[in-house]
Image (tube, rainbow, N blue to C red; front, side, top):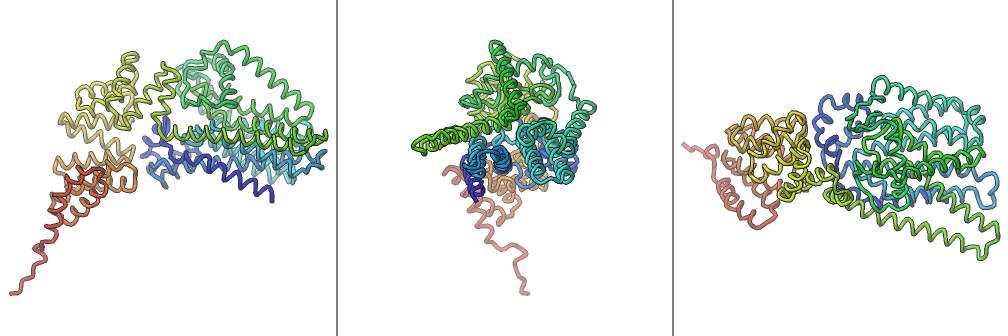
Length: 632
C-alpha cells in the first residue's frame, strides 16, 4: 500500500514540476529532424524510412506524433513528458526491489519494506525533478536519450525479477526484447550489458561467480546483442569513421578530434558535469567549444576518475552495493566518452541516466544516517528523521524552482540562445541560432546586424547566409537577399527555409515560375507549412489559376484554425474570402469574412474587412437567376 502511495506522489510531483515543458517550442535540431522533415516523416515511405534509420524506435515515435499532433509542439512534448514519467516509475520499482534485497539481511527491525520504499522514493523524486532533464523533456529529439534510459532501466528490472522468480529462459526472452528496443532508441544503450553484470554482481548475487553461474543465460543474451550491435555498426554504420569534419552522431572522428583528444576533453569536462549535478545554475542548450579550454582541469579530472573508479571497484570487490552504484555512473557515461562520441563534448542530456546512481547514493546515505542514529540510541528519536525530511524538501524545492525557470527558457527559444551568447560571446552557432529565432518572431531588423557580423567573420557560414536572405526579403531588399541565398543554395538544396526565401525573392523580382518551384519544394518537405500554402495561393491567384489558388488557400485556413498564429489565420481567411468575392460566391465570401472579423486583432483590421463583409451579405440575399420562377 505504501508503495502505491509513493508511486502516486511521484506521478503528481513529476506532472506538477514538468507541466511547463508542454509550452516549449521546437528548438535547435527539432527543426532539422522534425519540422523540416515533415514530408518525409508522413510520406508514403515514412514507415520504411523510420525502420531503416539509425534510431528506428525513436523515429517511429516521431511518426506517431506527427500523425496525431501535426507540427503542434505541445503534443510532442506530452510524449517526452510521459516517457520521463515512465522512467521515474520504473526507477522507483527497480530501486525498491534492489534495496529490499540489500537490507533484508540485517535491518528487519527497521522494516525492509519501509526502508526500501524510502530510498526508492527519495532517489526517484530527486532524480526526476532535476532541472538538467529539461534537455530531455523539453527538447523533442532528445527523447532518444529518454527511450534508451527507459529500456536500460526496464532491462535491469527484468534481471531483478529473474533473480526473484527464477525461470531464466522466460526472462531471457523478455530481456532480449528490452535490449533490442533500447539499442533501437539510441546507441548509448550499449552500456546495458555491463550495467546488468555490475548490478547482479554487486547488488543481487554478491559475487561475480554466483551471478554468472545462476543467471549466465541472461548475461549471455545481453552481451551477445550488444556486441552484435557494435559489430554491425563497425561494418555497416561507420562506428570507426574517422572523417575529420564529421558533424554529428557516432564515429571516432568528430569535428576533427582524434579519439585521444576527445577522451581528454571528456576528462577536462568533469568539473562542468559535477557542477550540473550538484549546482545546476548555468544550464545551456549548446556548449560546442568550451571543453578544450579547461586544460587546467585535466589533472583534477584524472584524479577524480581514478579515485571514483578505485573506490567503486574496491566496494564491488568487497560485495558493497555502493561500489556497484558508483561504477554504474561511470558505465553510463563511458560509451559517449570514448567509442560512441557525440559531436559536442559537453551536453546536458548525457547526465539523464547518469544522475540515477548519484540519487541512489544520496538516498542511501540518508537511510544510513537514520539507521545509524537509531542504532546509537539518539534522543529524541524524531530529530534525525526530521532533519532528513527537511533536507529532502529543501532540495526538491530548489530543483522545482530551477526546473520551472528552465521550462520558461524552452518556451522562449530566443532566450535559450541569448544565454548561450552571454556565456560565450564567441559562440558562432549560438549567434546563428539566436538570429534564426529572431526571424521566426518577425524581428528582422534586430536579426540582420547579428547575421552580418557573423558573415563578416565567417563568410562561409551558410546558415547565416540563409538567415541573411530571409531578413533582407522581409526588408524589401530581394536583390541582396538573392545574392546570399545563391551562395547557400547548392549546399542547402533541401533546406525548406532557404527555398521559401528564394521563392519570396524570385516572386518580388517577377520570376513567378521560379518562385513557384521553390514554394512547391517547401510544401513537399513541410506539408503543414501554412504560410507557404498561403503564398502559393496568392501566387496562383495572380496568374489566374483559380482552382490551384483555392486549393492552397483552403489548406492554409485548415492548418491555421485552432492554432496560435492569429495574424496569419486572419490573412488566410481574408484572402480566401476575397477569392470567393471575386468569383461572386457571396455566401462563401461572407462566411470567410465573418471568421476573419473574429480573428482580427485590431480595429483597423476589422474596418478593412467591414465593407467587403457588408457587400457579400447584401449580395447573398439577392435571388440568383436560378432561383427565379417563370410563371408563363
